[in-house]
Length: 83
Image (cartoon, rainbow, N blue to C red; front, top):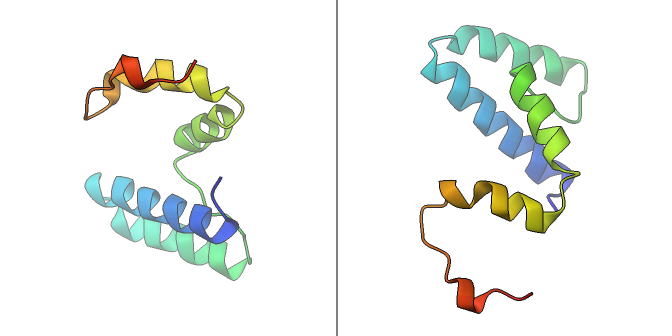
């Protein structure tokens, strides 16, 4: 699992990448600044991605791996998997 600081950093990096790619960098900066002023432990946006990532925390690892194997950059050698 991520530590609180690592999770905050990862969420921030993803959010900045998403907002910058869509051209809303100044809006993202405002949202982050507001969250930091309020002392939030985690600053997450956009909302749909936040809900998705929070929901995926409760999915068993084996099921998550099967759902995301099609998105893997490298092929998984099925003979080396523990069962």
